Length: 289
Image 1: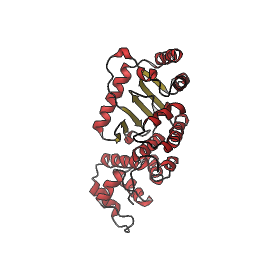
Image 2: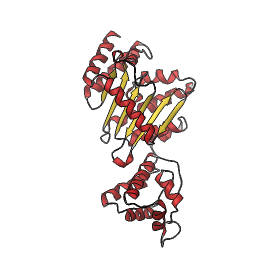
Image 3: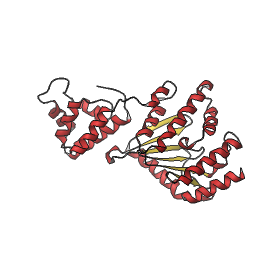
Image 4: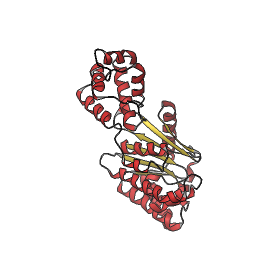
């Protein structure tokens, strides 16, 4: 059955492809093995298998079971694969907002819900996952070319709801790199910005997540685009990048753009202050403000 690519269908496809390649079986040969001696609903063509591996087509229980047997997946892997298959089209809470947000924002929200680690770099604003409600409102209201005034409240509500992921037991860690300029940029006015800096201090003091500040004195920044890198618990799931810009956003999965984003992130992190020194700087800016 065909459908839109979801994070779980993508993860399932990547894992199945890795297992197939490790077993040294071609798509054509695997499709033939699956289809041999079975009724039409279970049969799978090579083109359909290709769509499954790309996350664009769904599998039935028996189809997946046949693939698992053919590639020799161990019982623990089989359980994880079946869970992904069963939940591939499970409705997420964010779909209540789908009529107001782009497909990219919906995909990014789903990525956040599935990721075990998130790394972000922002040259201009404080990252959305650590924004206060007042700061988020000011940023969203400034996007008048893309957000209708009567949608602002709902967009702010969605952004605040997304932050719950950071406190869930299944989530690992968030690493934020932001610039010193974003600390001085009084988004929403001094009161809003002071509250935002206080929230950054609170996150830094809790030490579950890391905030790193890239100071003025460290020279040119590695880039001016804002981006997010999502990591997942299984090594075959790979990483996904989300790059945001004035003219739109894009999701990246291929090796070359992911490598470039990783290079930029590590460059920014290497130039940034350690978490403890970043916390001190945020405290200082907050007192001055």
